[in-house]
Length: 163
Image (cartoon, rainbow, N blue to C red; front, side, top):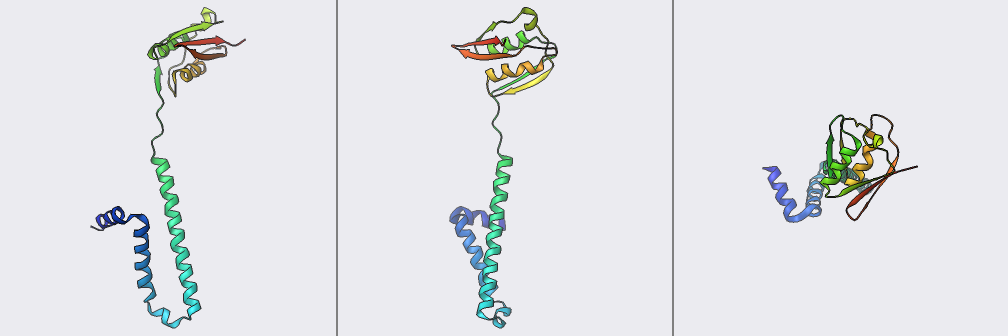
């Protein structure tokens, strides 16, 4: 019941007006306490300032908690390419499959056949693009694999061995 009331109040008046209503309600009841009749005006003013600071700090804390929670619960952008590489596939096979899924072709420059047939470890690759996925494949080689660069020109991935 109370939750429904607050949702309705927030929807109608927004956060600022709801906060002002809560502050006014607390202040009105708080100032009518018996202790204030025994305090000097300066003491009452000081207590009022402390109360305002306390309410402000709680509001800031709640805002920070909301921002942190929102960041934590915001889904991370999904990579475009998620590909599971089975154990024993060669570099050439994996790159060819990635390029085919991107409706592109592959051109290898400067590699020997033996280098392109290096077997890869089983792993899932997550990358923002096919080009980035091809760059990441080098780290899966079970034996030494030479450094290379990847560029895409007119629907063709050119993978060049670095000298």
